Structure formats: C-alpha cells, structure tokens
Amino acid sequence: MAQDLFQHPDYYQVDDLLTDEHKLVRDATREWVKREVSPIIEEYAQKAEFPKHLIKGLGEIGAFGPFIPEEYGGAGLDYISYGLIMQELERGDSGIRSTASVQSSLVMFPIWKFGSEEQKQKYLPKLATGELMGAFGLTEPNHGSNPGGMETKFVDKGDYYLLNGAKMWISNAPFADIAIVWAKNEDGRIKGLIVERGMEGFSTPETHNKWSLRTSATGELIFQDVKVPKENLLPEADGLRGPLTCLDSARYGIAWGALGAAMDAYDTALRYAKERIQFGKPIASFQLQQKKLAEMITEITKAQLLVWRLGNLRNEGKDTAAQISMAKRNNVEIALKIVREARQVLGAMGITGEYPLMRHMMNLESVITYEGTHDIHLLITGYDITGIQAFK
Image (cartoon, rainbow, N blue to C red; front, side, top):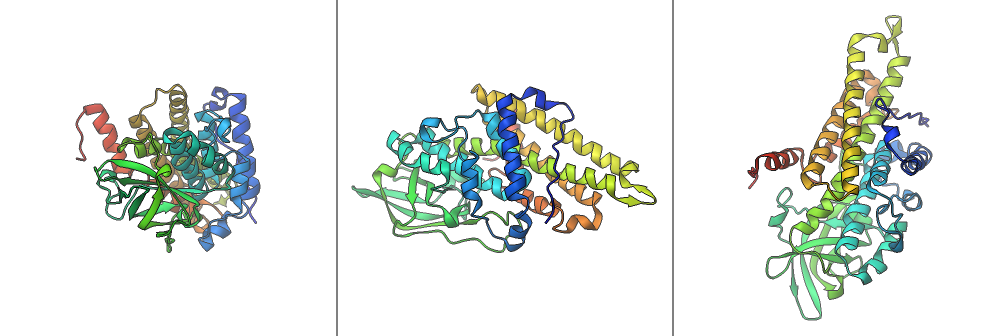
C-alpha cells in the first residue's frame, strides 16, 4: 500500500492570504484524504467501484454543503473554505470530489437557494451528514451543452405533477435518495422538482464501462409517469437561471478541485525526479525535466491566485458566471497538461497504479467536459468580452 507523502506547493506563499480557519479546514480535509482515501483509492479505481463507506466521513469533515448555514445542518463556512475542501478531495480523487460537489452545489444549494422553508428543514440536515444522498438531473441524451432544449416534462394533474423524461451522465444517480430534476411545465418554463427514490416509475440504471471517474457512481434518471407531490416543487426556481446558478457553484468548486489534482501530479513528479537516477545522477538535474517541473509550478501558482481572488469575489457577492467559467476552464486545462507532463517524467512507471497519474489523467478527461465543456466555457468568455453570443 503506497504511503501518501504529499506536500502542497506554495511558490508564492499563498498560504499567507488564507485565514487560520481556512488552513484548519484545508489541513483537516487533507489529513482525512491521506488516512481514508489514498490507501484505498487505486483499488476502487481498478474495480470501477464507488467507495460508499467514505460517505459518512465526508459528512463528518463537513464536505457536504460547507457553505450552507448552520441552522440547516451546514458548517456555515465561506467560499474559500469550500474551495479548499474541494481542492483536497480532488487531490485524492476526482470521483470523490464529484460526489461531494454534486451533493453540495447541485443538491443542497438549489434546495437552500430556491426551496421552501419546509423543504430546507426536511432535506438539508440529512444531506449534510450523508444520511441522504442526492443527484442533479439536467443533462439529457439529446441535450448537453444546450440544456434549454430539454425534453423532460411534467404536467399538473391537480393533486400532483406527472413527470416523464430521462437524464443521463448523472453522478450519484445509482445510490441517490433524492434527485433535483429540471423539467419543463406545460407553459415550457423550466422548474425544479425534488424526486425521491421509491416513487413509482422512477429508476436509476448505472452507467458501466467508463475509463474515467471510475470511483464515482454514474447513471441515468428515468421518469415514467412519476407522480411528484406538489410540495416537492422548488418554489423560487423559474427558468434556466435556476440550474445555471447551481452550476456556477459547482464549477467554482471544480476550479479549486482540478488544482488539487495538478498539485498531486506535480508533487509526484518532483519527488520522483529527485530520486530517479539515470546516467549517474537524478533526472531532476537534466534541463528538459527542470523545464517540465518549472512550467508545472508556474501554472499551479497562477491557478492558485486565480481561485483565491475568485473566492474573495464570491464571498463578497461580486463574482460573475463568466469569471467562474474562466477559472473552471483554465484550471482544468492546466491540470490535464500537468498530469500528462508528470506522467512523462515518471516514464513507464507513470502508467501503473503505483502512482496516481493515469487515474488523475483519465478523471480530468471527464472534468474538462462536464458542467460546461472546455469549448463552451471559452465561448462564454468570448461572449462576455464582445457582447456577441457565438453558440446560438
């Protein structure tokens, strides 16, 4: 069993910009990852199995809805703390971060933001502990980057809503107790519904044969004449703004999370380069290896400052969706490039499960696509700076 020797890079002393609480939250998450995730994650990735026993621990360290107020079971932390938790979880594995990210930003956030007081009291405390787990149903077989074209619909039947449709590529779906489902009403308006496992006609088949996010449970949400109680409608969500606001929260967490994977890859490559002897000396002494490592730490440092500033803007309520898109796109891109370069530093050893690099690389191939593809995020920035929309 490989020992987790990770030491986080901090070339520009970004730690000095963090509060004592930020560092306490980050370090507690890091220690939990080293103790609970690192020793078992390669085995679960090889088996393509989600380690469900980690759910309780994720709840205990406050990884579920850390920004949710304490009155609803959350930790009441700020958004930099949330980002640091996501960074440390993805340093362990993208699949584990995905599970926490979906629960926090795509399930708890919409209930907190758009739900009734009764819904908040009923669901949020149990979601915070992991007693209940959730999924987010937006993407459909025919509608990925164009969620406004969704075909899932519900009609008012007087005492209840009748829901029909399907969602796919849904993290947590196979074991979720509830799903936040976005569907169109009879007027074509997008609304949010809380669908509970056990409702007749609701099924969640699992997606198999994934090369990526193998420790995350992915599936579909199928609705065949599902009767949803009217009290399960999110009353404050109206239109596409609802799910997109949730995605902003999730993308923000991803920007931090991808940075964690990049840090892990850099740390692995740096340690290996210092220890691996070729031609009578460590490979870290060769110019091309130093070039790789120097470029890695440069990109990591830029990404650290990007998300730190974004976190402050979010804490102040000044962040924009376009700023979040820029951070998500940049940080996932640099993480993928860093992991690929790190794999080359390790040579053939880099493809084995003895090191995390191939697992990170495969995971990031999903992260660069989900919750807004790399290209769409680039066009969001283009629209923001030109005022001209390129994808309609």
